[in-house]
Length: 517
Image (cartoon, rainbow, N blue to C red; front, side):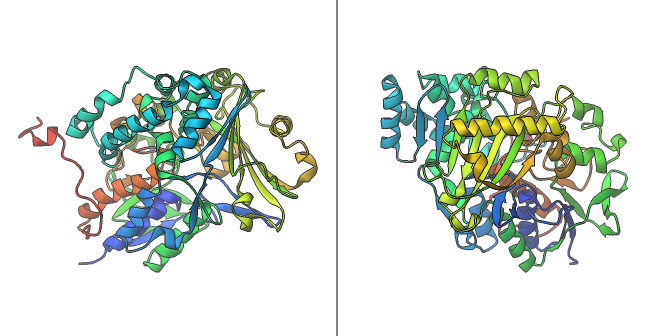
């Protein structure tokens, strides 16, 4: 039997994970990547001896990638050494107080009680309930949703009472904690999805549970090291990775993609896996008339996540009292979120996140120095905001002032080198539609079967991996998207799927009907 040609557009985390699995199944895999590096935003860059992750810095819930590695005969922790952080991160409140989040639950209860005596015991109740919630939802997050029929799976029907669609994530957390600061400390993780906890579905209370139950890790060398090693392993399995190759379009026979074109050549394809920003890629690569469900007009009507304003700072010396991860919550958090998601205005008293990974990993900066990563949530690209030199210069100054309030008063004097990324840069240089760094928003109207399907519904032979498809954004679920895609594609190409952990996707109630009309 001749091998099948699978072309993967994009060498992001989902594309690399898919490449490893498809190669293991016996496909001839070619990954075509427009950038000069692998990993997409899950990559690192170096500047004057300082090393920074571009995007993700939290490595959460390694179970998914660990299982993918095991399925192809590899050990994740051996291939990519990493350490579990304790404390996981600090949550600092401008309104007063802080929490150094730790997987030591007794210590967490003590910290919570010190902040709010009436809330002692709330952490344990929250973890107990969400342990059961995740158990119910795992089969849903690990299975494809290709049509409305999939909503009638037994597992989804059993988990439905836990969804509480009438509740936001913030409301759900306020049912555990009396102190609003604590509700925020366990719900800010909705920002991993680019959403406000006031607007994010209550389902996502499982996010902070994953941190406490399964850990927050730091891969030595940064999260980008995971992508770099995956690429090396994929190549050792026979995958061809071609960098600096911008895909310009597909060759179709009807609605089936048969060729993938770059600026200087074409690739024959039995199947195509797209690992690129969904909205941007579809509009650039696929003629509008071939996309019935996802036309340009329909994409424009969808809700998209926030963006981020980034500073990467090479710092002289170390900030020993600044933890590996710090999340600073604005004094008026709700107003801050409204400015970002509804008013589309730049917050003047923003929340922000700082990574000081050099206190854990000395390889990231010259000896004795630090590499700081600063992220400020801001609106995605919108007509209200013009990102010109004056805007980003002013916002840089505002961000440095906020950092000074966090105890980094001399930061301006210690900057050796820096880089800045704005929503405009995310859009133009990284190919993100509207600069939305967390893809399409994760509201209930844009999840499960209402999100672009892993087996893309508008085309034949085209599959999706990444944050723009099911299950959604964030590294663990992006890796899961690759597994969902491969579980469908491998048998459809007649390849060997015996190495995969599963199990076949769960049967839906509708599949048991003798006729669907």
